[in-house]
Image 1: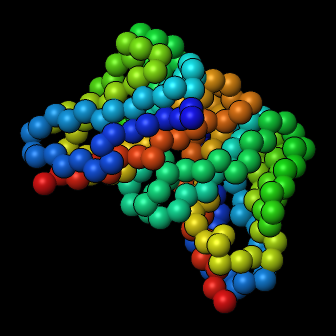
Image 2 (image 1 turned 60 degrees about the horizontal axis):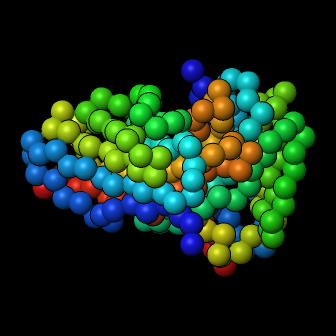
Length: 112
Length: 110
């Protein structure tokens, strides 16, 4: 079955530590996206990529980094520069806006 | 920059009643999406609206798009408890990213 997989489901980060969230899709989608959701809030765009080896900052990119070395993969690194990383992170992919976007199941990141 | 606003933010309604959620956006776009999110879960696609005047229905939910007014509505008919969730609209911006509304948390009670 085609889909988009995020891992891990839960992640704990210590102060000053970098962590990487995985997002893999086998839908052959060109575009991939990372969103952050805080409790009771909407989704805010962190980074997005329309094509391999290219990506753009979203509205809240500070403290995050991404790479897009393969079409299937779009990992997100939460760096120590992100002072308030506790949130629910959602990855999405899409190939044509006529069909909308598919979301992964999310990663819940907590600072300990 | 595109801004997307939903209202109401919270909706508590009795089973069997009808209600409408509104989604307004600030910049021209002719593609709008509705998603459902259950607590602690990811987003489930409900509707993709691609042109002015588009109307789509699935069960007790009906969505419409008026691109001239920059307005989409999600109408709930004869609500049931299973519809309790948070509903998001999202607008396609420059055909390369989605900007989400704040969400409407719906609670349906007996």
